[in-house]
Each structure stands twice: as C-alpha cells, then as structure tokens.
Length: 190
View 1 (cartoon, rainbow, N blue to C red):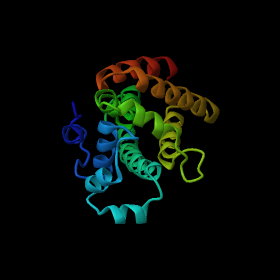
View 2 (tube, rainbow, N blue to C red):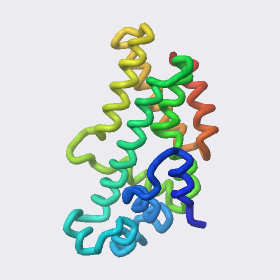
View 3 (tube, rainbow, N blue to C red):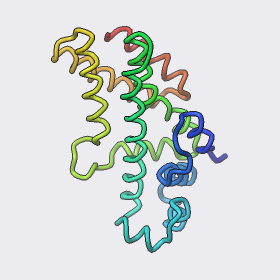
C-alpha cells in the first residue's frame, strides 16, 4: 500500500506539492535501490537530464529532499515555542512539529524506516549536523534559559530531550504515541 503523503502534508499544514515531499514519497514507497532516476525526475517535475545536472547521485537527491523537509519542520517547531500554552506543552508541541509528525509517515510507508535510517546517516555538506538541528537546539536552549535554567542546565536538558525524541521516533507508530512519550520525557527533564 502506498502511503498518502498528500493527506499527511495537508494534516500538518505542509505543502504537499513541494518537490521534496514528492521525492521522499517515491523513495519511501519503492525503496532506495528500486527507485529510479526517472521516478525521481517525474516526482520532482523535471527531466532526468535536469536531475543529473543538479545532483551527482540518488544519495544527493535524498539529502536535498530530507534537508528541505527538516527545514520545514524546524520552522514549525521553533514557532511552537513561541505559541500558546504552558512551557511544557509548548516544548512537547515543539518536538511534535519537529519530529513527531513524521512518525506515521515513516512507519506507514513500505520503505519509510529504511529511508529515515539512510537520511540519518547522510553527511550534511561537511557539517557535523544539519542546520535545522542546530536551529532547533539553539531555540530550545534559549527557551529553557527563559524558564530560569542556567546555560549548562539548558544545554543538558535540550540534549536529553532531543536524544529521547529520536528514540521515540523509532518506536512511535503515530504522532499521538510520540506526543504521549515526549510528554513524559519533558515532565521529567523540565
């Protein structure tokens, strides 16, 4: 069964017509090895030649698509910290927008876990970590410091919650389960 990314994007206020979502959909439904450059070109709305001119490999295409998705989710996550609710609720919402919304996508697509795992191991243009991760970590540390934590306490708390969120992503089959688990983590850490 093919996972419906259009529905996912609409439910999470993301642009389902964005090329990067379409590319990830193709990879997740067919698997990295079986996805052809023709499949990816069609999903991106360009010719195969254009794709070959823009990217050196399928790994580069996956990196581009995941970087775009990560940037989209980081923007929504940072906005959640500035939203309504208690500080703990805002932190849980931050993690739901940053990572948790992807739980059903990863676990429902035939090759979602494979693509997620590959994306986590890709190099990020020489960076130690993606810019979106740095942006989210820095926003979370500032938020925690605004709650009265010292710089070191805020950094440690952010690290702990970020690592827990990655672990929850691997086991949570849906956003609700992810949010429930993050609520427990945030309750203990904050």
